[in-house]
Image (cartoon, rainbow, N blue to C red; front, side):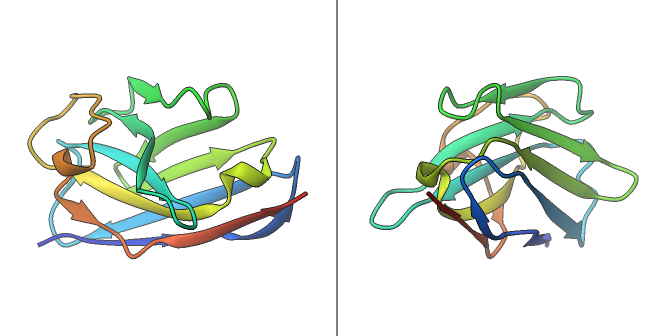
Length: 126
């Protein structure tokens, strides 16, 4: 089993920055791709970013490209999401997840991710 715990969310103003963390425990994740997703009020869960097993390759949703940076520290079993220039439309619960089947699939599909955290709320005021 894998446990994922997100942290770092909060209430910020438009233009501010936040860094989310996702601490993993249970089984080693260094051989698996990981990703961030978000779910806004009344919306379906959507892809934000993914990183391959060693952090060497990343892929972003168009809506966050150039503003968000995904990274990982396998020695600390931690995934990060640096979010800059936040906008009100970034308001959502943010989830980290593990693509258990692949090391570098670049998947944007919710169904391709096996383990999920409980989420952390990010609220951006205008």
